[in-house]
Amino acid sequence: MVTRSLFVEGGGDQRILEDECRKGFRIFLEKAGCSGRMPRIIACGGRSQAMDSFQTALRGKKDGDKVHLLVDSECAVDAAHTANQKPWDHLAQASAGGFAKPDGATDCDAHLMVECMESWFLADLPGLQKGLGKVYARITVPHGGGNVELLTKAQVMELMERAASGRYSKGGQSFKILAQLDPSQVENKSVWAKRFLDEMRK
Image 1 (tube, rainbow, N blue to C red):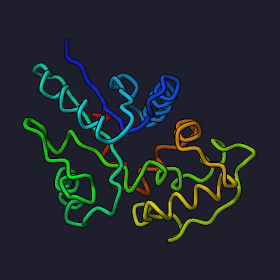
Image 2 (cartoon, rainbow, N blue to C red):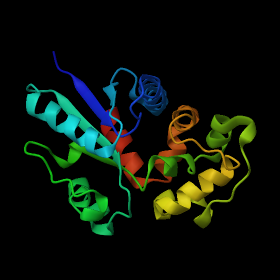
Image 3 (cartoon, helix red, strand yellow):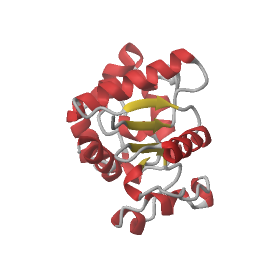
Image 4 (tube, rainbow, N blue to C red):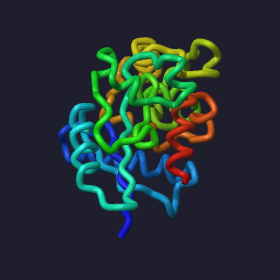
């Protein structure tokens, strides 16, 4: 039986956060049109754990199986890497973690949240407001929010703190927000998000 797995950075080391992570991504992917193609979502905690789990699955996969990795880019992605869709070239850089492309991996296997998952939240402010609820404080996104990949991680996290009135929780709130997002808004404002969703919809 052919399987499809997605190893995601996020979820921490608590079972409840892993469950929230899987649920958030499942709802987001369903809304993006991935029903019937849904991968098994594995919440891995940190980036290193996600990479380790991805590599283990890659080594053990059978013919036809699909194994994907989704992690924060952590820093700006070189324009050439974006244009040529070379996530492993980015991940190999020290500033991005220094993760070498594993044997057997292809560029279609790796996906980036640029520069972090919270960047996606700023692509859909109504969704962010729903996810935060009463604590939401109105914010203005630089560049009109037209391309959230232009924002640094520091800028994104500062805006999230403002939006959450200084009470943003990367674990507890983040996956609830993810579940409220409109994927079409996210992929319209993030090239790498569109690339990821296009691959998941195949």
